[in-house]
Image (tube, rainbow, N blue to C red; front, side, top):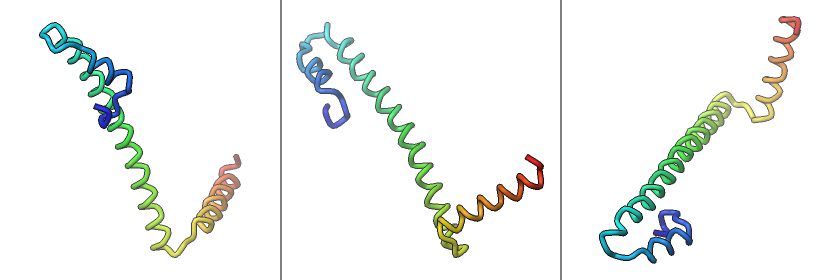
Length: 89
């Protein structure tokens, strides 16, 4: 159960629960809470993975264009400054 990320307190509670039918609902509820927590973690990990993949694509694009990260920062700043002057903002 620890492998699933269940807290030590929850593992202890799970182990302390008896083995009779009267404990099935409590054990099931504890396990369902763990499933919900794992699903939330998976969702967050998917978002994190998407961000990392975007960064990889971005850096591959910079390499393809022969730019360094600092080159791009300067280009972005220059482009923003140019737009600001043109827009009057």
